[in-house]
Length: 120
Image (cartoon, rainbow, N blue to C red; front, side, top):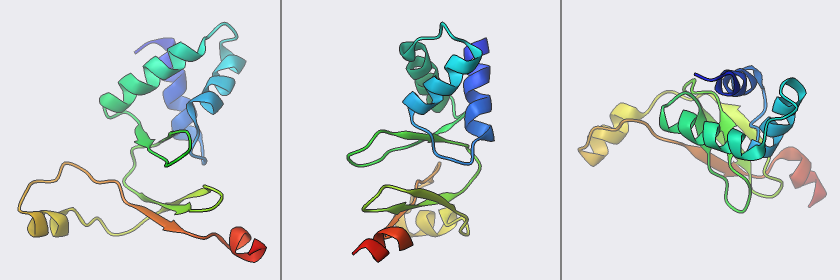
């Protein structure tokens, strides 16, 4: 693992947020001022493919990157705020209903957060 990949993994694993590639890039610049955005994207893609970090695909917004610790997400359908949600693993239920072996799943529950609900 390169020094860049190690730092990206550290940034993602130590963050309580769901960072975009650009946000990770800005944090990388603090430690490695000469790093380029393409390096961050390349490392993020490779790390997702290798299961070191998790990509949270957002509709109409930039993808976010997250720890691989088993959890799901609440996403506000208006402002895009993402919160971690720790539910019981439903892999066995999904396997029973589909008749196939499930490697993993990505559950995103869409809702309207309190702040956006108050604005309405």
